Image (tube, rainbow, N blue to C red; front, side):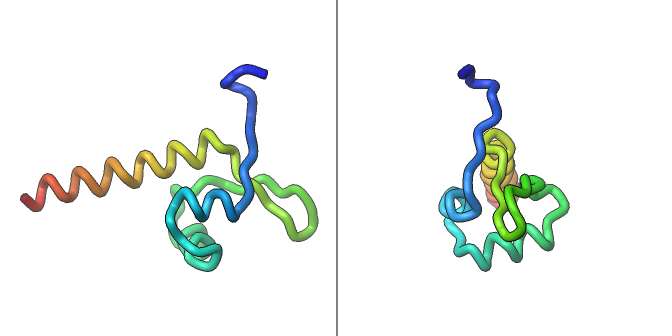
Length: 72
């Protein structure tokens, strides 16, 4: 398995990456059009592609740092 192979993470794992609850993560998912699209695994189960989740978190950090430096 190479680093480019898809790797899925659960909603709980993604919520931990975001430092949010599941509810907070689902709220953000509903409101943010840039939020990664989930991969349906069953009738009531979803996952996310790890690389997309990591990219999303990195983009959030970059945006926060950019807005902080502009405010200074």
